[in-house]
Structure formats: C-alpha cells, structure tokens
Image (cartoon, rainbow, N blue to C red):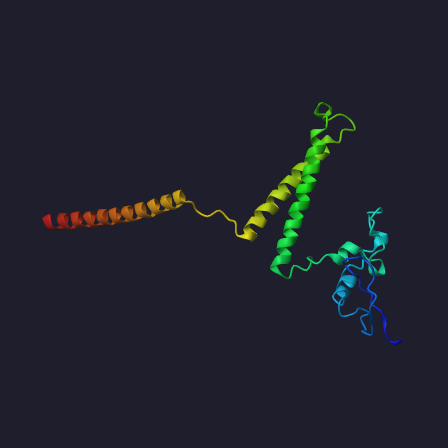
Length: 192
C-alpha cells in the first residue's frame, strides 16, 4: 500500500458517497473528480451546517460538508449553449411550479377578508404578480434565445411591399411636379 496516496475528496454524484479511489495528486482529488476542486472552493460558503433547509435528506452527504446539490450541479458554468438552455428551462419550470402553487393558494383564500388586520392575501397577491412579471420576461428571453421571434406573416410582407411601391410612386410624382414647376418657370422667363 502506497502511503503517499490519500482518499479522493470527490463525491460520486450518482450516490452522494465519497469517492473510494486513492490519489497522490496534490489537489486531493482523483482524475475522475478533479473538476470538483473548483466547485469545492467556489461553493465553500455552501456548507450543510449553514443551509437554511434543516430537514434536507442530503445533509452531510457532500465531501467536506459541502452542499450535495451545489456540487452535483453540472449546468452552472454556462460555458456551453446546452448548459445555458438547460438552466433557462430549469428556471422557467421552477417558476411555473411556484406560480401553480401560488394560484392554488390564492384560489382557496377568502377575498372578503381582504385588507383586514392580519390578512396576508395582499402580500401573496403582490408576490404572485411580481413572479408573473418575472416569469413572462424570462419566457420572452428564452424564446429569443431559441430563435422563436415572430417572423413576418404574408400579410405583413404585402403591406411592406405596398408601402415601398407607394414610396416609389410618390417619389416619381414629386420629381414630375418639380420638373413641371421648372418648365413653368422656364416658360414664364421666355414670355417676358
């Protein structure tokens, strides 16, 4: 057994268990989990003992007490188009889930008590409206990212063509009017 090797500090994303491989790399991570080193330092604040979710069943599963979900997130770097796409979809999906829950909560509330002391309906409605606005903006941005901008319809194209044709006609008529005025001036000068 080589005493220079240490157990890898990485985590198996599939199981949440610590890697059992041994490594002599100075990072303390084996070749399979070396990319987790940056995640360890980047998310050093995201330790399980600081987590607001006390009942998390993954508490303490990550190496070094780091949040399992923060380490397992493969999308966060946004260095490739598919990662950006996946992150945007995940955000929209999460927002839709929240909106659905808020809608169900609003639908069961008694609006006759609106504005009474201790009523939380106003706050819930404001939060709902804010989330609707945010989600709408994100959906538009996602559509642009996906290239789903509205193409001009056939009617729009016809209107544009008519406009261009009318501009040409008016330009020609204006030129003719200018020529006529110049001819009249020339005729007037000759008759004098």
